[in-house]
Length: 495
Image 1 (tube, rainbow, N blue to C red):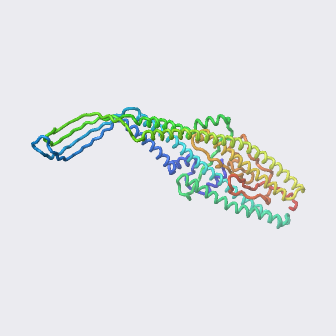
Image 2: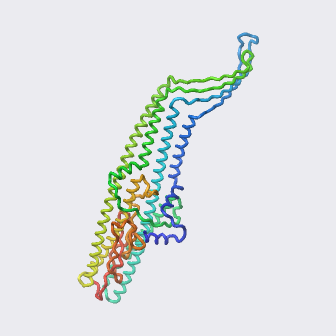
Image 3: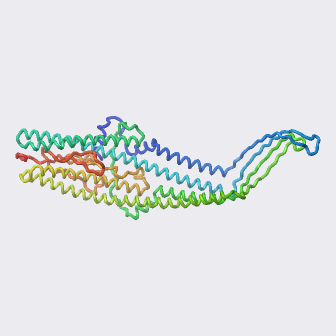
């Protein structure tokens, strides 16, 4: 686990519950406006299906009309009369034909698409939260490295001053030791700012106040290796992608909508029960009628044909969107697959470079002790070893991120049934003194197939280092640290 990140997080807040990634995702899904908007979109689709289904059920309307009439009588007496009339009408439309059935089918398909889009939106939000979460872990690890680097630089400066007063080293060694201290102080300030910024981003994603204290738990990255081929991951990605499935559901909905639009000349049937009560002395006092009305559209001014054309265009658009979604998923999963392969190769290269730097530093220390090399060579070898360790650690985490991104692309956004990791979210520098930022026991939690950092060369009393301190750089930048492995003076002066 990321031991340094945990220590830094504990230092930031001594109270409160430690937040895990699954809990952070659940909190974001419960509070995020984007998640709430996606839920309301789904609710609208459910309501539209209910409306379409209601049109196929019994619907009854009641209409009551009162009127006052003045009329001349054809056969008097009387020759003229004024009378009132009340008419009550009960109407029951009878669904016939396939128009209402197709409307229900269209609404049901659109609801299925909305459910898949809701799932996709939740996965996207989970990926954002995971990215912010891992970014905070990485920046906390870099902050811990910056703190240790500053402490190491100060110890080296203090040691150089003591040895200079004893006459063992020249004043130049003290001057060389002051540079790393100043650099480490500046890097520590930048690292702290970056941690604060990352914490604010995560707080915002999970709906907390920006400046709320936050302690997060370490997480073991996903495994690096993938036994699948490129063809297999493409097949799985297309099968599991909610975006593709949603686009296909919309196509089926538009097909139903086109079928309904083509029935614009379909007749409608309505049953009516009419009760008329009148004070007209020349006619009926009360009349009750039951009638059936068939309404056949004859001319609509081209409205029906225009609606058919609109439905055809909507269907063609949705079919094109399926192709767009498929190509986007193929590109994304192919890129993730190639990135994962490249990251594994880069991790192995970084491991080899670290081993070479380890051997080179050990031999340089041996040569310095035998009087063959000046101190500057040792400082350069020490800086190179530190950079190699950090580069290897960064490569491990970048490979883990690539593996997580590939897993998310294969599973339609879900990783281990939970969340999708954002690319570039991971990345932690190597700890000072040969300890790795990957775990409290100095062992990487990432799959052991890519090796682990060496424990470091033989060490003695601290010595000035020319390595720049670890800062909170961007994910693509390997921060520099210092190592506890330092050359022994062997009782001789320092150049």
